[in-house]
Each structure stands twice: as C-alpha cells, then as structure tokens.
Image 1: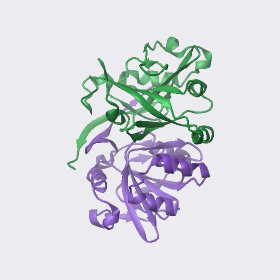
Image 2: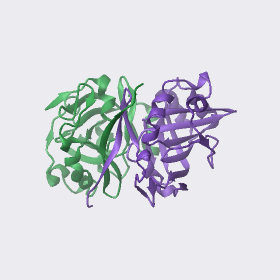
Image 3: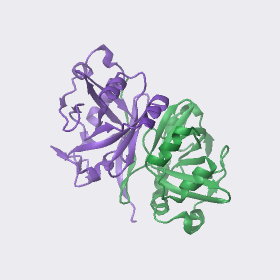
Image 4: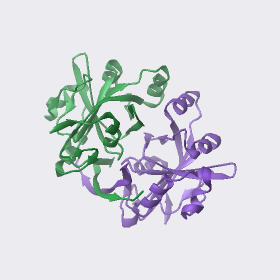
Length: 188
Length: 188
C-alpha cells in the first residue's frame, strides 16, 4: 500500500544511492527516464539534485513544467529501468510502449510510476543561478514537496524490504545493477 | 593492491551510490568526513558533485586547497565512517585519533584513506557560479583528476568484491548501512 512519508524523512528514500526513474509531464506529453545521478541535497525542507542530459526528451518536460517525480524502483522494475533508457519518448509514449502503469501525484503534474518502492515529488528550484547549473552541468536542483513509499518496502522511517520485488537497485553500467544488500548496524 | 583506474571508467566507482569518505588537506592540516551525498556529474572528463556542510571542518580545507579525495570505504571501514562523523577535526587530527592510515595521492594534496575499495582524486571546479552552489547549497562540483581501486574490489572496469571486507556501503541514517548486494544483469 502506498503511504505518505513525512517530508522530514524523505531524504532516507534516496540516501542509500539507489537508481531512480524520473517521470515528467508538460502540455499533454509525459515521459520517464532512468537516472543514477540523483542524491539528496538537504534535509529540511528536503531537496534533491539530479542530472538530466540535454539530449533527453525528459529535459524539455522538466524545464517546461518545473516539476518531476523521482521514483525508486525495486528489483521487479530492473528490466523497465534498462528499457526506458533504450528508447526515446520522442518516438511515442514510453509508458504505453513498455506497459508501465501510472498513478497521479499529489502536488505535481508528473505521474508516479506504479510498482516503485518509493516516490519523491519534486519542484525545480527557480533561482537564476540554477539556470547555469542546468545549462553547464545538466544539474537540476529541486525541493521535495511530497514523498511516498510502498509500506512493504519502507515503513516508520526505515527500509524493510519485506517484499523482495521492492528491494532497491544500484546501477553500475551496461545493464548491471547491484541489489541493495544486507543491513549493517554500527552503534553510534 | 591499489591500481590506477582509467578516467573514462572513474564514474563506475561512484555510480552505484556508495557512501564516501571525503579527505582533505590545507596548510598543514588534514581531515576526513563521511558523505553520502556524492554522485557522478559527468563521464568525460569525469566530474562529481558532493555536499559539504558549512559546519564541517573539512569545508575550510576544501575551500582553501580546492582539492579533496572521495574514498569509497568497504565493510571493514563501516565503524570508521560512523566515527568520523562523531568527532570534529577541530579537536585534533582524526586520522591519528581513529587509527586511520593514509597514503599520498598522486595529483592532489589530500590523502588517500588506506583500506578503501576505491578513491577519486578531485579538484573543485573554479567557476564563479559554483561559489553560489557552495554558499547556498553546500554543493561542490569537482573534476576527477585521478582514480584508483583495490584490485580485489574493482578490476577491468567492474566491481568484483572478491574480498568481502571491501564490499561497499550505502548509508541510510542512525548508524544503519546497507551492504552492496548481489549483482543483477539485465540484457540490454
């Protein structure tokens, strides 16, 4: 079941460095791409940084709408993560082509990709200096305005991975991922 | 054995989102901190983005020298990752206090923390716009000028984790990590 994650806990959804699915929508078009280069940027209000290449169809939708969703896919979506990188949204709706179901987000127009372990609804920070980041480095800085998790994966501020298909993914290259592995607790 | 990683492959050392140790040195002082908020920013020349808080002793050393090393610690260093976050370099040399051995880097003055699985030697990008990123978001953008790996962990462009103590770490919060888990290959 998808449950709200308090914004103060949202950084934990991305802190361990999983691969993400960036979904976007603008003026009747929508798209989804994979991004490994995403990280938290602040705790409260939560912010994120993500690299979105100039060549990506997603780029125009994010620039146009000022919004995106970072989905955190689990193992069951590994094939989709590779597939969304193997075709362009310019050639037709990727969700339809790849059979990816979506649900509406709460605060942004970009859709939530169904089947993810967690989602961060994001609004691009509008400051003038960020235009330079976007142009020079393809780097988008955004505020997290809503956060969600499948409660089989993340509950009460902790990743559980009670459902193996929601175990998150860390991308390396060439279709190779690492699954998020065993938990290791170090006494502070 | 520590071996050079070609700069074209350097992004793979950080792509899967492991926690990092940021080491720095300036004017006879040196320090090390932990950072989960680090990611690749470009392939070639390789660049990285990392968040270094204004309150961190490391901050002044990185601003002063324009250099740092991102070490990628393995399981054996999990305790050190937590420990470096539990004391400040203002109170004395953390390496000595925590028994962390170092080796000289090749291109920068910051030391390599011995026992890591990999290392990225980095030079801060000097552009004026990045002053704003550093002040407003604690966000440092840097070019990777040399890269190294323990060849029991990473060899020929691939993570092997042949030595379990070098299996990399993904930090969540409160002393909890996830180990980098099983490999999952998706045909492209």
